[in-house]
Length: 579
Ligand code: ADP
Ligand code: MG
Image 1 (cartoon, rainbow, N blue to C red):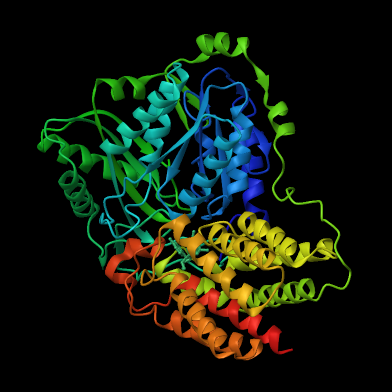
Image 2 (image 1 turned 90 degrees about the vertical axis):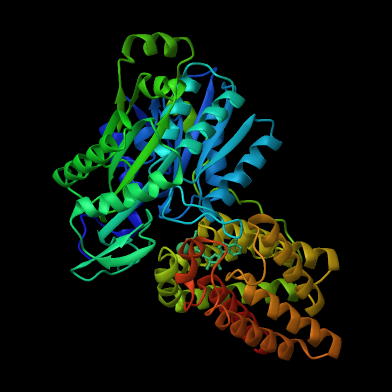
């Protein structure tokens, strides 16, 4: 891997710092992972977006006048955790009339942003969210999570941002955002992959003469791998799909020719040339074209084409003044300065009010020194952390063909943080340790598996507490409640090719053992075995949830990373029970 970076673990922070230092008149840091407008404007609806980093200038480049009020960035290609999204909401909620979250349609993002919105709403913030799903490469189906959100998201930032800037109330800003979502369509292609710095290996490989048609913005496989063609033929195929998906007849459109990070401007111009010719042949009028890197995928050699069907309202909102790092439209200077002067709050104030990542859990209630349940839970968490370290590369590799190459990295990062946290929890009782560890998992694992594993662990803590102790029975009840929690949160079911497929047989095995009175150590060993078999059994399944679902039939033949990590967790717990 050759990259212009320092240490992989420093990438995200140095990217944010680099942008903020370059444009201090436009953006400021509210925390290491949260960027806000340098001059806050209050008394309006605040727009917040974000997601995993690696898509720069999205999203921090769209923080500014007439677009976003805050952007929150997770690790490269990994959704920010719920508490970080909430911190971004907190950074802009005060003094504003509401907050709208713009979320791209990935399970991790949807779950974390939704949980943050619910928490903010409980605290009295007027908050709502929209989910962008513009990628036509992925077939829509009521059985899957739907389409991915890609470059069309920037048009949502622009139009909803203009409405918010003009003083529209929250339901109105949301209506505009949803109108854009209903009228925007995108498709992408790649000829060279991208490498997540922490993974060190590309998420997919292509032969010299191959292209990946319909590729996602995390290097997720697309609809078809085929021999290279002249770019005009690629554009034709992409437009065919886009124009076949929505009625663009006699429409006026905005066009975005988006570079994926490794595509030079001259190639984007050749794409633009063909896009304009085809649209003109079809009688579709182009109102404006945006060409450049707007939503990248690290250094991927690829591009996407987005069409936004306009009406008078959207065309006006698109043309409204804006000033952000990566988007300038019209003159915002004088008028904006006048507006800002009334309610200007230095971003530094926001910085003070936002907790930094990982500063949430501190106080530990004291409990008895010699609590065997607490000791068992601590040992089990250490064993799980060790297992995640040991299987990190394998889990990440399983996430390559059907995901975004980060599952092992996510799990190891999260459970390493749990291991670091354990000494500070000495003296706490078992349910408390589980609850605190669950919070760390939610905030440090990130992605979709963070909130799902975190929910599982939280429910297990509650079950143990309710039962008044850690027994095979309360452990099993915790797994059952956790499974329910995961299904409630992310809508999955058995057979969807997720961690659920390893959990269900493990729980069934434990139920049998309980009925038969099998000793705990044997019961856990059998459950670990059942989980491993459940994970194996995901291989022939077609994914219906999570990133892998975007692949449809192509997800068949691969083992689900989350089911595999669950099986390793169970094996670690079982080994602990033996010793
Ligand atoms: P991300 O998909 O955000 O990159 P990870 O790679 O860490 O997150 O985790 C992927 C795993 O999460 C999948 O292999 C799957 O087991 C699990 N997962 C994804 N979506 C769901 C869901 N809706 N229900 C249950 N598990 C899910
Ligand atoms: Mg992943």
